[in-house]
Image (cartoon, rainbow, N blue to C red; front, side, top):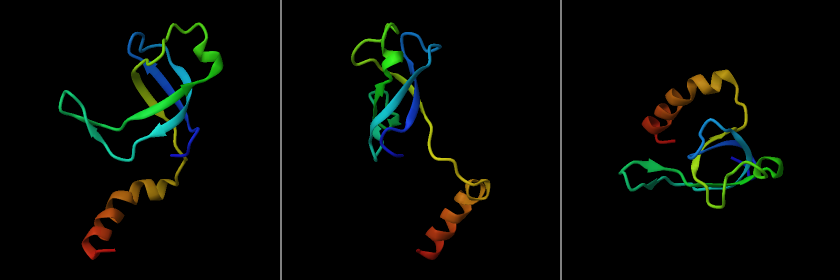
Amino acid sequence: LAKDAALTMHPNPDPLQALPARLRYLSWEATPRPDGSLAYRARATLDAAAGSGSGVGIGAKGVARIAGEPVRLGYWVLRRPLAALRQFFGA
């Protein structure tokens, strides 16, 4: 994902309130969480209009939906079989 990719943040205090934001940092490796699951760490900057009056403070946590680049349907359907073939043939 590119820097400044669009995302929507749903803060923990009010998950039904979707706030537009821009991606600032995304870890390349999943890290273990205290509950034993794995998660990718991401940091974002709220858009100026969303940040004012939203009631979300500094260091707010929540769930984010990150919008990536669109891909062709054929590649999206065949990406798992292609990955399996690459692993089998060592490419």
